[in-house]
Length: 125
Image: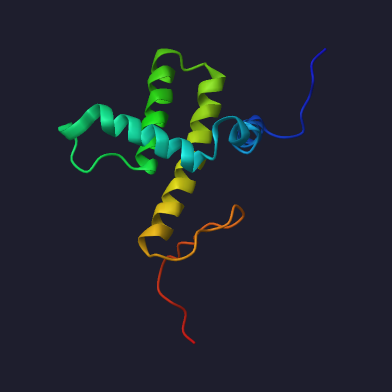
């Protein structure tokens, strides 16, 4: 029997990625920030002085996204790689938001807020 969904498949992919990154993985592996920082520390130790300045947590998300893109280059029909790529993109957004907040030395955003980037000219008062 075929199961029909009312949501477009692209929204289903986002929902699945959201469930993965907002689910029990924090309990299993720690928060994404802790996990990415741990990974960053390990990669920086491995690379040593071969890269100046080392990786950031945001870099980790980009590197893991490249891993998924590399896998997709081999098999572009692998749906779990597409879903994981979406998840790593969302986690990269979170890491970049945390790094932006840390760079201006203000309180970290909560899980439900993200920095808003305004574009264009300010409105006249």
